Image 1 (cartoon, rainbow, N blue to C red):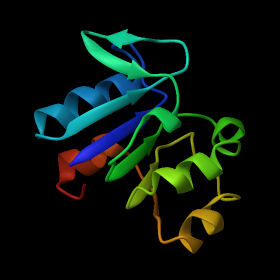
Image 2 (cartoon, rainbow, N blue to C red; image 1 turned 30 degrees about the vertical axis):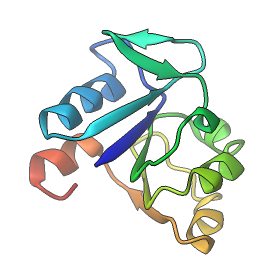
Image 3 (tube, helix red, strand yellow; image 1 turned 90 degrees about the horizontal axis):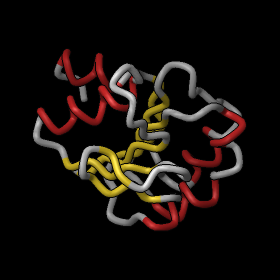
Image 4 (tube, rainbow, N blue to C red; image 1 turned 45 degrees about the vertical axis):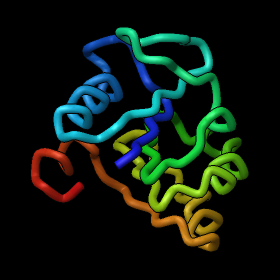
Length: 118
């Protein structure tokens, strides 16, 4: 499965970094997105969602102020689902995503992977 991580980090203590590692351990392909990073441990980092395509899941690790500005880009990307990890929840955009058939999940990628619910 192709999983985009919005808010990817190069810091091993950040949850988005841990999610990248655990997703790859579980056999998923990760697509990293952060506006100021170009590489994380040899992996290419994209500056925006508009540079990405063919994503099954979008994992959110950004605050609601950021995600609120990205609704059109998320809809254009058309992932099957968007997982809003703790701290990234933004109920104000859920109806816009669901209206175009994107499943909204409030959950933690790390927990989902470790419990077999991803």
